[in-house]
Image (cartoon, rainbow, N blue to C red; front, side):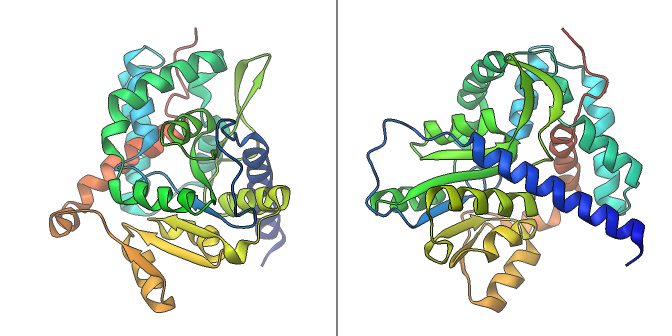
Length: 293
């Protein structure tokens, strides 16, 4: 490994660690919940395509667009870049760095309270009916056993906390956007809570809460969440992508699939890539040229 490559890798590890620590520190716990009876085990759920159908950030973006946070031209331009990256498989490091640095910049200048209020409306408008009943039942099973249940997602912590609260879960860990005096700066604390950063968040939370990860469960649909799934004693693949399904079968992990029409879904991979590009574009700063208020 050349020195520049080693430096970039260390920077990624440092950003992931910082994002994970920030997410764990910002994790909200519902005060109304009774003290759990099992203090050393917990369950961690990814959100997009695991707890709910589709991408939560897409529904948030649509709600923000309707409220003039950014223009259609902004989101379509960024979506095209993300779709190109997914289909062609080539990402310019400068573009990736720019996307990371500008992630969630579309909320710069807006208040935390404003985003939380919009998030509540967006949940009612586009998310509530997309919750997978099967996954919700699994989460409730853990709660009934006296275990705590956290969402772990790349979505903003504000929207993640709303989803957790509406589902009666313990709390959530998500991407933390920096704010000063209740106003967003447009910068992230660390990086997006994605991949290795999720594992760092769980590790930090486990240390804080005294959890035994070998007694914990984790649920996800994506191979990208392998770091999170591999660190617990009970990993479960929910609606898995092809790579995660293969890995889960090879390692004897449980698999739950609540989707229908899977053959049709496979036939529409190009369409899915475009849709994923749209949600990814928003998550990575869909409005670099966003409208400022």
